Length: 574
Image 1 (cartoon, rainbow, N blue to C red):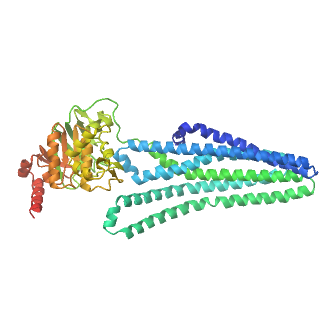
Image 2 (image 1 turned 90 degrees about the vertical axis):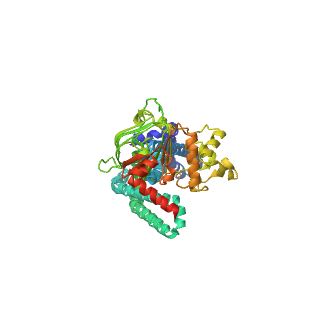
Image 3 (image 1 turned 90 degrees about the horizontal axis):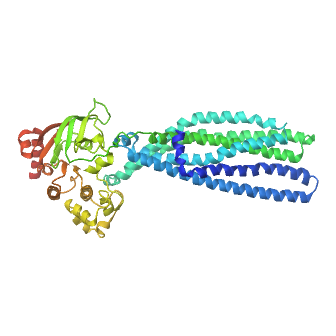
């Protein structure tokens, strides 16, 4: 885990190495200052040699300035290394998530991935910055100050040795109890982020149903849950500081007691005692810093585990390395079954056998939950078939590189997603090199050109996040135009004209017949009118294909199709 995560330091290794090296200069100055102080007291102040005192005083000022310089340099190197490390870590995580299939994202949840990319990375960044400074500074200071303290007074050195086991045992107990608490706290963060995400995405629904007070109450409960988990986790951590300070002050009191008696008896000089106290303070501060470092490590370790889980997660779907492309737009399902849980006892699709010719227009009709979307999502490998084979353009979909396959298949999903930017920017997702003429042609085919030109800035109109300033029907038509720009061999419209009126729907279908005669077109729809002109219509029920035929054939032979048709005709008449 540590090797995987810390390999992301990457090009910032130089700063990560220079930060602890600079610390050595800072520590060297700090450890020497008490020694100079002792000399100044015993050889200068005690004897009244003011020139010696002045000389030692100037030396101490320069040493303090050098210590400050090295500390500032170390701090800058550490900050650059830690921020660069966090940048690389976030970049690696984001790239990994981009390689995930739908099932991988479903496993972690969007809210949890957001927390890992933000809060967890920040925890590790802070721990790393503290580590490359304190993990070097504290041991070096501890060893150096201990040696100097023993040199100053071997007898008094025995006092502070008893404080080390007390601190060690205290830190060990805190570490053992803190880790599971912080794991629970981060899960509460996931839940809170999920609540925020859900509310912001559905803010219009919240306002439409006047549920603001209800959502405020839910969010308050979620934040209270985070607060309780945080308090529960951190109250064990904050016990560390009082224990450390108690040990530190108790040790200093004992040193003053024993050291004062020794000074009174002439066994130790005043300067020696003064420097010894300063060294003991440095030793105890080093121990405290090491203790805090261990505690910070415990806090960040929970975050490391969560990030490591994402980094080592294998994408459920991997493309082939072979360079093949689709020969045509033909599609074949050969005894295909599919489960979202890889459970053959819980199948969304069962034993699908279907052949679609290149250039054919296929309509798919079925009730909610009949797995229409599940069927078409197997074509571009958004999911993999649990059993059986899906063949596109004469090749098994698993034989394609993913980019190659998905370039041949344009899909307009049920959830129409637009991104912040201009309309033209969104359209060029289909083809980043598309000319303005090609963009306009695709928009005319999708019946989007006219309403786009009604905007003050036309195709340069800036869309809000998620396309909030266009209607549902307009969003659908922009997404259809975006798919057309790919010039694919297969285009799939997954209930993507549900928000447009029947006249516009008819115009889109007419444009498809005229412009996409060689493209295989699959139209999933709830309205019979959207698919009745298709070459063939597939009727699905409970994950199975129940009937296939033309509109007229199905009216005569399919009970499900006829019931849907009659109910829609009745609704239209009324």
